[in-house]
Length: 439
Ligand code: UDX
Image (cartoon, rainbow, N blue to C red; front, side, top):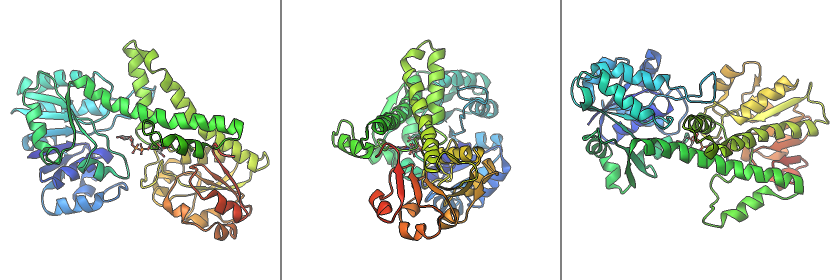
């Protein structure tokens, strides 16, 4: 099929390359010419394992190309995927829908033959119905410009796998879109043949699936982080608590890992947008627990600062603190709402000299907080340090020998904000090792 993918960020670039990999002819569309030029040259402007190879292969074989022209996109595509971002509004907690709206406003006036526009972005429930009406109003072809919703659940770091082998596909289809299901089944034919579960539902349910799934994941993480707080007050060990709970298959161990909490471009802003939308709908109380989920998550960052203060004898000013990790999670260079970088920056504000190292995210971190020092390696970062904070669990940090690290620091003190280093090994090498929710 001839598909367009509008918006070439994390979601769009991955979706475009994966749709080409499935055998479709794909035109990626973005309003930023620098982005389309880089992608056309086979360069991915962010770090996502496996994506650069996939992109380069499909650009080279001619199945994937990029443009800035909506007119060309409308001419080319049978199905248009809208993959633009829905960040948090600068003036509040709700989602900023300007990019989602702009796609419809820019594309619709060029739609002169029957076509399908498919939203993939995470949006407040009710957005799709509004966009469907606007699309039919603006398109010369009228109601034959149909709109469907097909939420995306990809995780950064394994985005390619999540797109080519998703856990499920969800199609949100309205009665006013008679061709939508057939076209979506055709787009995803190879996945459906591979027995990927498919849920066909209405527009509001499809929008809500994504918000609900992210709210659930955030709640699970904050639940175990709340238990970490209780552990800290009682001398219990949250890692053992979590492991013991995980054997109950109704609970399971995934997303039950206590630490500095969740960050990134999705979970934090999505739970806030979800609460805001629920309030608008008059059901704010139903989601009021998400306020607590957010608060627990942010309190973990405070806890690291308190521990750091304690380990530095109540004086952070002038201390040399090394931070391992800047990305919000490993296998990503994304620093949006990253707990690691937030903590690093707060330590700096409290007078510490902070040296940050991350295997992939230093460039993005520097753009955001140029006032921090950035190191070229894990050992380089800790030279002369009074304290190390391990805040993003890259395998590279786990592989370090605590004895070798001890030789270059000023003081052998470490806080493991991800509860993943070998505590016994570090203590045996003479370190004061502290973690979150553990004695
Ligand atoms: C998330 C959803 O998982 C994905 O389905 C959705 O499409 C987009 O949002 P992503 O933002 O890539 O994906 O990250 P995810 O792997 O979910 O991790 C989110 C954050 O939670 C990270 O900061 C991670 O470190 C943290 N986390 C995760 C924990 O603190 N503990 C855990 O047990 C799991």
